[in-house]
Image 1 (spheres, protein in one colour):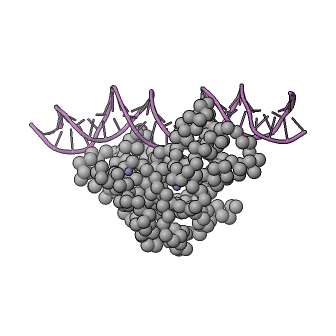
Image 2 (spheres, protein in one colour):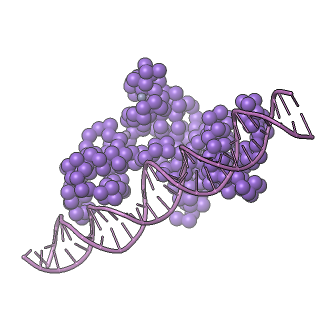
Image 3 (cartoon, each protein chain N blue to C red):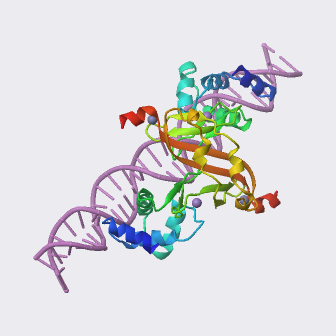
Length: 139
Length: 139
DNA sequence: TCCTACAATGGACTGCGTCTAAGTCAAGAT
DNA sequence: ATCTTGACTTAGACGCAGTCCATTGTAGGA
Ligand SMILES: [Mn+2]
Ligand SMILES: [Mn+2]
Ligand SMILES: [Zn+2]
Ligand SMILES: [Zn+2]
């Protein structure tokens, strides 16, 4: 994550305490927090940080490609620091847990030209759904 | 769509004017309307239909599998009557147009067992993103 | 140390969707 | 044909996620 703060500085962005704690909260793998969860955790270190700042900072990190926004069906977006390796998501229909997964092959290749209708197709998102081991046994 | 109304009746559901117009509005292919768009079109035929009824009726149609909910990034969900043939979506990043597309092969097959983490994986959604012909030339 | 452009704040505001209490009505019973 | 009743519809209040804005604060350069 010092990586991330370094990149922010290189872009001429001011390094504030708020940006620091948001970056720290997002440190780690398999992290998929909502903005409000990020805010709650950041507030443990910096009690007066505002929701607006968390949204602003997350938006900045998304725009430089250091964080990925993961849209979830009807609920709050989740913010994913694992932006360096392309991956897809496996979501539990029971408890909402999200895992990073790596399908084989290029998902874009499955869309033939005849199904592209003249679009310049540049990205693809895949969401697998199912029940995690805990939710399977809980029935 | 008379199909759909028949199915509703078989389930013991009362056949009301409101349910009829919602079903009529959703008739056709490549339809991906928001709930408010459905409401606006339904209100042209039945001016006093309420938003709540449109949401209720769409929810019922989704629960019997006659309509699919399509989550869109941060915006309103779209309702898709093309529930009979499995398909995926191609979304224009410029204007938001949605096209039904049919990738080759089974998208589920691209996820190896070692990437399933004990989940019972039952469904997959694929969203292709790009620029439609109009938005490409508009630059 | 001082300046000032940029960042943070909190509260109002919007869009999308849900919920509730009261009124209405489709459809079976008579 | 009329009655009855539980299911359906309605308007509006409400809730959540996210945005916007005017004001206040401050990082970092002179
Ligand atoms: Mn992820
Ligand atoms: Mn569709
Ligand atoms: Zn689970
Ligand atoms: Zn377009």
